[in-house]
Length: 67
Image 1: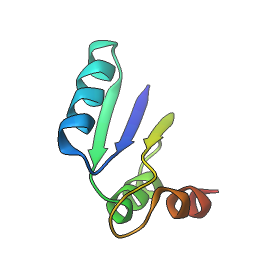
Image 2: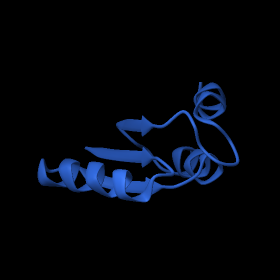
Image 3: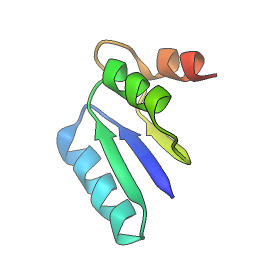
Image 4: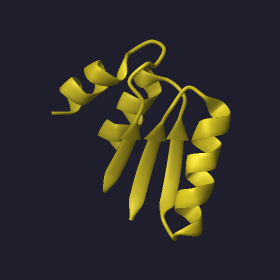
């Protein structure tokens, strides 16, 4: 499975990435809503871990645009 993690807290995103990779997931990480939205539309993900308070485009806006 391929997962996208979108979180502006670099250490937290890295910890989530390590944990998911340890369980066998392929993980991409983005640190702002604009890049996260671009990645989500350019690649196929099975799941997205999305923070709400993001720079540039917040998590609610990303979610709404992906719907």
